[in-house]
Image (cartoon, rainbow, N blue to C red):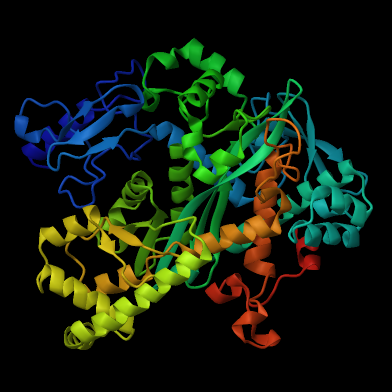
Length: 599
């Protein structure tokens, strides 16, 4: 290591808070080992992904400065001048660990006693905290926690669910738009048994999916894949002081474009944490004196901060349709806690990165009109972005249009394509032959790029696509008036590669899944205003926010592994595949009996 490298490394260490001791908001937030997202997040900048240097004896080494206050505190890069809002690396790591634990499934090796010091500590990881405690009447080994004296037996959950016909019927009804009360009526089960069966089904689906997802990386090896990520707001009812308040739960989903496989579906509800206890702990640690990125507890909403955010207008997070529909004051869940939106969404992307591995050839990640999330995605995949293997697109299009307006825009798009084929026909043919483009749309896109930016790459192309975006003239009904902001054109793409990326950038796969979620889970449907009273309530919505996560888990498994293509595609029944079969993760359909017997 040269002396200049040593000086640079020393300056980097002096510019961040140490893992222990006093925390200074004038330094970068603490890292978690080597992990951090607090650097310049502009993929086109020469300082992208480099650790911040805020102070140095040598002014040439300084890479940026921290400016702003409270939630708006950001790192401003000296090279490009762009600001990146600072995040808590500790909160990101904690939320990723929570999502990864849920995705990994469970072997029932720990006791769910949240007040115990060994909570969620599996016996396989730390056998010393458990002792053998005999066997169950059916012969399954039982162990006792040395701290709280509670016992847990390690055995198959299916031993307690012998009425498989009843449980299978509940599964089919739940994912086919039947509300819980009607399920109780049809299946002839009381409420407590219904909730018990849904809990069992959610855990079976989670474990079965985790077993399959271990091999998901193989389906990405050597492939060009496109992922679409978006967040859906699902409102649950919560009884509080003789009123029914709405609790918004965010449902983040990532879908693979060509197969429709749902790579991940997570919610921002943590049933374990208590926001009141978190707030007490934050007062004890003095967390509220620091901006959020520097706090020890920055992952979930503290009780009073959530209330204050309502005053500042949390309804701005929802669409105009939901604003008009819900007149209630939004509330924090009566139990459990909500994870902060930016932390939850970034951790969701981290989970996706873990599941798909790093063996893919090219990856395009599309997000829906959220440049902050797009830059966070580029930061999480920083090594792949620098290698030219991963690209991020922020896709915008006009929503909430009626069918008549959409059909009109489709006709406008068809006319624009016909006109471009005449005007750019020769250039499109040359681009197709040069770059090996087979699809007519990709040839036209390449021709437009060549006309606008010239045959050689310049920094103007990457900057233009990141700031002004690419206006998609050939409107499609599902995405009218679309604009694509490609954040990662660093000059390593040919015009043919760029045309393929822009042609494939789409949010339609995840929007299709969200539509399925609304139609298949009755509690996810939009609510109805009561005939009397001023509050909005959702007649079929869940009254326990934890049920949203369970239903989302069941639906993801059902959609990926059990639901084949519809007959509208024209394929015979024997050739219709599930998304898991298309992506190569399953050889055939999974049936109800397989779900119930999995262990």
